[in-house]
Image (cartoon, rainbow, N blue to C red; front, side, top):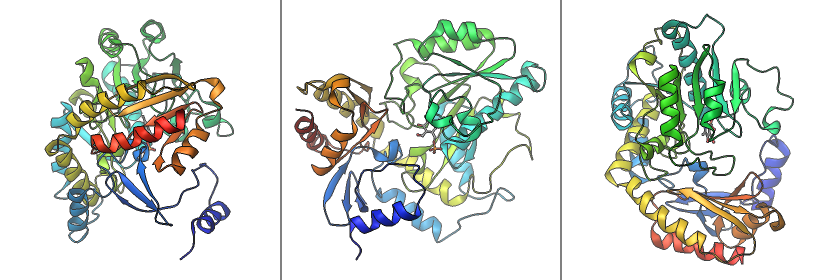
Length: 399
Ligand SMILES: Cc1ncc(COP(=O)(O)O)c(C=O)c1O
């Protein structure tokens, strides 16, 4: 059996270097735990950027995957399959929205939301064709396609990839005054993450989304909430917007929808928006396939049946409180909601990477985000004992 070093060497030699992974080679996962090729056990505190909310190989999700794989895997949307309608109903009932459209990855779902908003702008709002504008926030993360990076403010995500898609205006996150100013008669939508995950777990002020909802209503602008990372219980509510008692016009979902085993994404929206999609206007060969839909159905059932959202709320409060209590000369701020928490380090700490490497050696897999932040996003199935394990390692590393 090849050892970890030779496997890393092969990946480095033959793979493009668009990531800088920690030097660990994982070969097996079970719940919150993973094992490397040398048999060492680690707790997964990243959950594949919130995609593994169910933990590794959740039995109900794996069971659905195997059963469906033995039955039917792909039809394309040229025909109906017996899983997609079930998924559409579940997503609509959980989100309180009218219709859904399935895709595969988060970035594709964001692209779909942009297409929906533009078409709604022309056909319903009456914006002259080709002139629609969409407002987004600085420090956003919505994915990596050309159109999506066209409204990124991150130089590293954009450099060398132009020309970009026009039609986007950037404002500061958490600034409702800037939103009011940015909206013109050509604005069709405002796209925002309820919490900016990738840019370092940046939290808006309480009431922000409620005010945003009001502005969008008054100015007839669609509110697109990207809950690819915050959705499906991660913040202690099924969707993060529930914390503010509002609903988006378009909801973007991905990651945990696939139960940690299969890429499934979607948008859901109000009837007035979703009706702009007519046969031939949009699609995806694999989007809505029966294998992915069966997995997502099982993932959503497990989320509800096992009360993972409620668990994230209670365990999130515990983890936040305990993380805040860690005595460390390096910590500047600890913030988050539910089981999406960021430990922001002082500039003098020398970056989050070295702490993540130390944590790895101590059996805890974390990943830095935006140089100074250690992201804590364990699977929602984590028990208090699991979180105590993580906290003991964090205390040691940050001392
Ligand atoms: C808020 C948000 N939107 C979109 C995406 C893109 O998802 P994907 O990597 O599946 O394309 C991500 C991924 O991290 C995300 O956090």
